[in-house]
Amino acid sequence: MSGSSPTLDLVALEFDQVSFGYGGVPVVSEVSLSVAAGTFVALVGANGSGKTTLMKLGLGLLRPTSGAVRLFGVDADRFQDRWQVGYVPQRASAATTLPVSVVEVVRTGLAGQLRPWRRFGRAQQDRLEHVLDLMGLQAVRDRRLSELSGGQQQRALIARALVTQPRLLVLDEPTTGVDADARAVLRDSLDHLVRVEGIAVVYVSHDPESFSGLADRVVEVRGGQLVDIGPTRLLDVPDAPALELPVAEDAR
Amino acid sequence: MIEALQFGFMQRALVACTVIAVAAPLVGCFIVQRRQSLIGDGMGHMAFAGVGLAFIVGMDPLIGALVLTALAALALVRLTRLGVGGDLSLALIFYGGIAGGFLFASRSGGGQNQILAFLFGSPLNLTWGQVAAVTALAVAVVVIVVLLYPQLVAMAFDESAARAAGVPTQGLVLALTVLVALVVVGGMSSIGLLLISAMMVVPVATASQIATSYRGTMWIAAGIGGLSAVVGLLTSFYADAPTGAAIVLVALATYCLTGLVRFVVGLWPATKRTRQPA
Image (cartoon, rainbow over all chains, first blue to last red; front, side, top):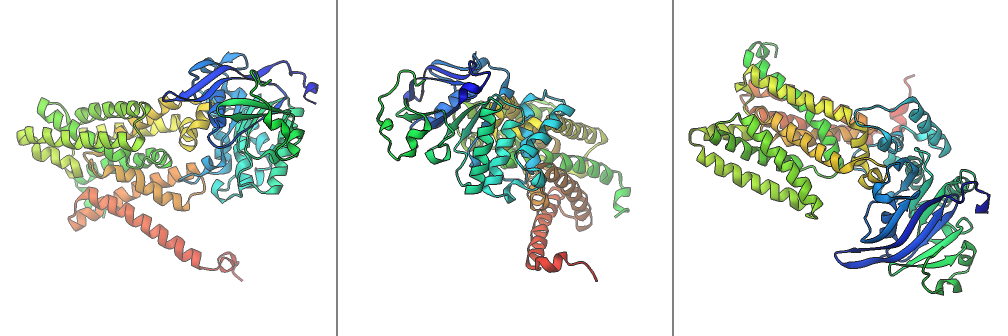
């Protein structure tokens, strides 16, 4: 199914023998993984398995102790075109001390593209309106984010990540505290983004049901290493035998 | 009230207190959102040391405070990057400032009383030159906040997401800390080193009770700050009370009153509140 994408050969995110540790304690060990355009890769793993660290390395928020992380072929350290990467953090990060409206939250996604001392232009305003439409947020655009349901808050965070029209979308536990209807909307949106828009998606979750049928590949992070589980359908059966696969050198 | 403003010293105090009380909450919105409400206190204590040092070396207190708070801003950011938690690094700055300030004050001989006047402010003794310097600082703060507004909001709301989106968060953290230092130095002669940080926080807390947006919170807070300065100064004149304390107490009273009004309105059934008159 991902073969239908015209940009499949483009690698959006690549881990090349990446290791990382906190204070000398290894958290991620020699991980290699490629995420191509138009593919949906799910990262699963227990708390403390290293999946969040791996995600932060992929976003360039952490620097690997060895190996290389590349975004669209460029070292994450030196990657300038940040608009190409959309990041949807856990919804807990939306807990704000001060009031913030939905449109303000979504607009912050554009701040990285704006040079200091400059204002948003017409094209950026248009993209803002488009993404509010896309995520069904126009009716609540001026409401306080904290007044919205969990699903609406999540959609606002996704809209913020999409407002730059990224080519790689990284989502961290996007369905936590989100009701069934909102999950369905999220699934449809992600399916559209991957299959139609050709966006690469990295989806970090401990809930296989939330990406069942969507993911092209499911990779388990276990003890800082990768275990390639394979296509989502293997996860339809709880405790599928594929979970017992040995650690892959390159979980491609 | 008009009568009070016929005096030159009151006019100078009005300008000095109001401009900084308007500018302070604009910076406060970002530090409150980042849960650093006490950062102004840390900077205030370091400015105290700067004023003391300035008296010893014979420098303008404003310059001494600016230099030391700028160094404190750099140290704070550096300590945080080295892994010293935000709270702990702030405490180190705070205690360094108060100890250094007291030491310098004790060595400054005749300047001791003047140094202590900066702790709680003495706006009635300002010259127009000093008022101009305070106004310049306040204008600089407003201009920087307005120009960096989109990036500052992104960073304050979610620093990791902002970094991932390419916002230069490290530089912005430093810029924000320097903005706090500018507000503290700007407010030390009028509202006082120990009280000016309250004007960064209290009006923001009040505005957050009624605003629905970040921008709205900022402008309402700036308005409350300015209003508190005017009402506080006039109250202090007629009640013969310390001005800085009066301004902060007015701001706190506004917070309480707003909370009370919201509580009472909340008690009123929604159907009655929205019913149209017959």
